[in-house]
Image 1 (cartoon, each protein chain N blue to C red):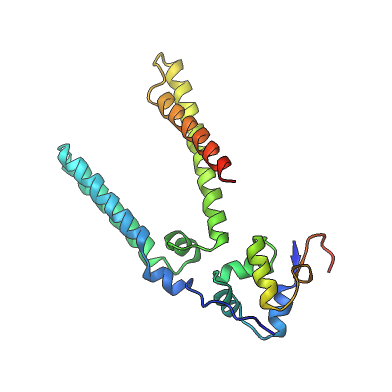
Image 2 (cartoon, one colour):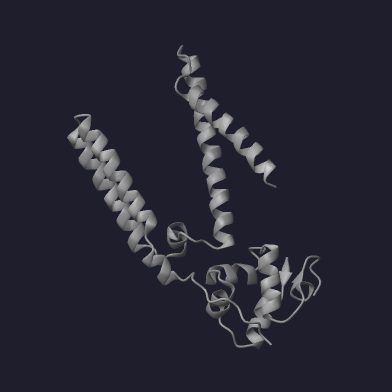
Length: 138
Length: 66
């Protein structure tokens, strides 16, 4: 005997109908392109906007694919939450490695390691603040 | 963690899509649980067991024993 369960709101079709990520991507493209245009670099603004438009279209029309749909879905299920958290942690680790290498290369070249060291420091502070906050909630 | 989801679903002639809808997860998540590539959270494991009117221990086997 099956128990009554709530109706699902998570379907591939819904992923397709809730393109918040393509919209956000397009918004970022407009912001970056506008910033470039204000800075006087119209060529760079056009290239930036075109790149973001292509990426947004890729996200929108690719939403039926599970990976893209999972990224675009505003209300993910628990498996996608896990994937998102692990992917974010992986990206953060890669970013930290880039910052460490960049700061070391800068120091070897006689620079003060800026801006890598500052960003690395900000990341470390954010990590410890996040750990403290999450620890207090668990 | 081994589980009996595929067998129980097959016995009821239930599609992955329908089970996913009932549990409010994606079809791919049901597939990942069935193929033991993803271990569900305790709330989802309980929901799965309740759906099939079984206990969690009857559906999931932490030690690999059926």
